[in-house]
Image 1 (cartoon, helix red, strand yellow):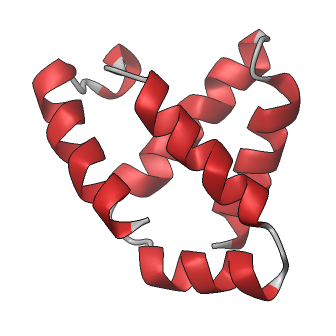
Image 2: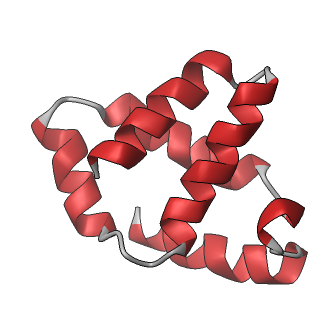
Length: 88
């Protein structure tokens, strides 16, 4: 949960840059890896008053349609997003 929160904070600050693109890839990779519990992540954000990072993650998911760097085409990513958004 901590690594995802740090990556989201970094992305929030540098989303318009090349490093922001790498942060985006890292964020999706962490989520797609399936080792992260979204319920634990929500609790983590609540515990440390980081609800803006939840909003940032939702924004990322709503504005990203595919990630070729992770071999996620539109269909795969749409299915993945649907599950994540429902869990957030």
